[in-house]
Length: 88
Image (tube, rainbow, N blue to C red; front, side):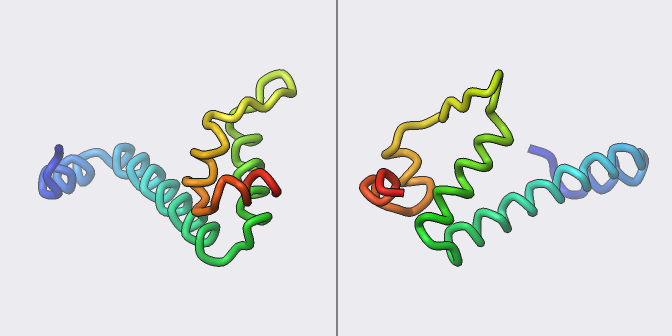
């Protein structure tokens, strides 16, 4: 674990590190924001569709999508029942 004081000192001494850290934090915040929207404002079908699109962007190899989790885990991740995921 790095203290905020140490982090501030290192990033002030190394602008490239500060830029890389900013990019990482920005990506993580964007991802968290998208997840909150997914869970809070979208219908079940939209949640499943968004999940599949995300997996398509991240995991496709040679035109095949292998999901990294079973239906029950997907349902839990999306805040839905496994029956709802199955119907969607």
